[in-house]
Amino acid sequence: MTYFKNKVAVITGSSRGIGKAIAIELANKGAHIVLNGRDKQRLDKTKNEIEALSTKVSAVCSDVSTIEGSNKLIDQAIKEFGCIDILVNNVGVSMRGHIADLNPEVYKMVFESNLLGTIYPSIPAIKYLRKTQGSIVFISSLAGIRGLPSFSAYSSSKMAIRAIAESLRIEEHKNNIHVGLIFVGITDIEHNKEVIAADGSKLILESRKNKKVSSPQYVAQKVLQNIRKRKFITVLTAIGKLNALLQPVLPMLVERLIIRNLKKFDEHSK
Ligand SMILES: NC(=O)c1ccc[n+]([C@@H]2O[C@H](COP(=O)([O-])OP(=O)(O)OC[C@H]3O[C@@H](n4cnc5c(N)ncnc54)[C@H](OP(=O)(O)O)[C@@H]3O)[C@@H](O)[C@H]2O)c1
Image (tube, rainbow, N blue to C red; front, side, top):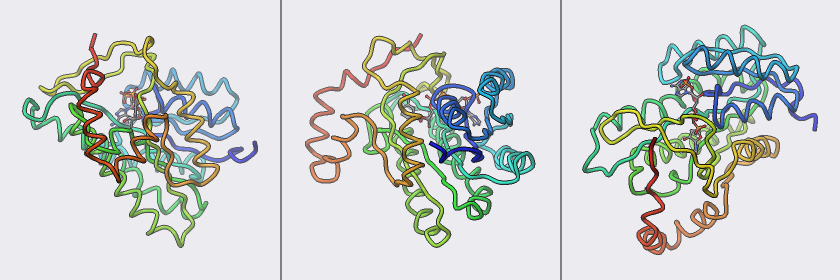
């Protein structure tokens, strides 16, 4: 229970959604939190909520898909707390649309957020994580296990994150940095979650209240378990575990199952 006490955790994209749930879970376990997001109002609101859990909280308003924004986040964490024990690379945006219909800019938008927004904060954080022999965690998706219809840009960005996590684990093995990779299933949304439409515009998703989805709290608990046990891969949900098992050995069966269940990949917007 004391594993996270006084540890310094930086969570990218933590003003709402899964990132916020991870921040709350860590704060409840006594960690000091560095929040991040681009919208200052939303970030300050979350900071107030987490401060009420009687933990030290800092909030850095910056865009981690830029080098400057990422450097600002890591620099401010060090300025305020002097060290970093945990970096959770949570920022990520999804998209919808078949490849033939996509504005090519969608790929740029998704890769800037999901890939660059992950690697840019990681690079300056590594030297601090070496000192604490800390953890760096990448939030992926079941869409990162195999390419899914309507999610090509999202799937490919999450697959690229796996390559980064694999390289980093080997590179930092001698420095005893823990690298974790979490494959998250479809998760409940309590807010106007935005994704990118085929034409590059923003799409607000409908509530998932009536669907069988994970709660952000459940995802957060699994992330903390991954960190505490210093595991590499954590795959969430039964369907995720089945997919991870079948995909390498029976990919054509997985493809057939997806084709048979194509309707399940449709999600409506508001
Ligand atoms: N929700 C799901 O069903 C699901 C399933 C599988 C995997 N995941 C993964 O889980 C992670 C979190 O997803 P989520 O659904 O919780 O997302 P979300 O609800 O859209 O929240 C994203 C958070 O990141 C911030 N953010 C976005 N872009 C940013 C940037 N460039 N720089 C700094 N902050 C940024 C947002 O605040 P601002 O907009 O104010 O910046 C917000 O706090 C993502 O990596 C996603 O791919 C989610």
